[in-house]
Image (cartoon, rainbow, N blue to C red):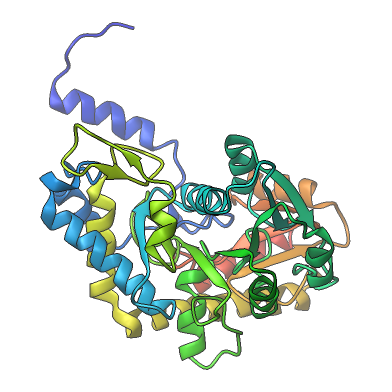
Length: 380
């Protein structure tokens, strides 16, 4: 590599050429991602706070106050304004922190966690890093976790049970109220991974959708993962982990003697304050009414796609509960169909259980995009 300095114009010209190789959300061609275009105000604020470091929060007291306010707003959204937590990089870090807290609080020699078969792969990372024995609970015929299977896997070594509010592959919500009762009865930590559903379900409920509680309104729920960089319209990276009580943060705090604060509970040390500031800005800007509009629009597109697929002879895996549609063709396997769609410029993904083409209807997807997608799909 010739490591010479270049002019500003040359650098930007080179980057522009590189960026042309990337897909863009605004094109409407990214149909398999749970991320989306961040709102312009969130991008502006992110850049304004780019140098702030919440790993050393005493130097950035204003930004730390914004993070605290974000956690309070998230808590209010999830039924408890008194929660504690942090803005982190995303669902993986949040889930890792939850499993670490559950392990540390229990203090067992051979800790185990129980997750649904539909759980995000981050729990496998957490199990490996934290030396947890991971047990997978079976799914019922509706592809939600089977409560009886969870009960059968419970043991004296169980430190946490996980439920999903918006499964990665199908967008389904596990029976969290039943899991909550089980965890209360057994005295087990319950973590809810609502990375996708956290910015959807509360607003759908306000819009009149019938979805059971999944959050701190249930006494058995101990912690929740929620990702503002999904349906919250915040820039990447912006995830949140929130706990019912401070003792869970304290259980994984370590000493940081040379920093302005002497205890740190997050996984990473240096931690961008730009994510917290941008999340604060977009939440304040959108408000409940704004998010209700976004979520309702995405669900209208979701139901439109589901109707069109059935009309054209495709089979849905399940009726969509959130903004994900998984389907299969009567003529070819999902991998082959996804390949053919890729040749036409559509980026879709494949669910693993069951195998199906998976479409995520994020806010960057508009009706005209789905109409164009269906036109190409029916010609394959």
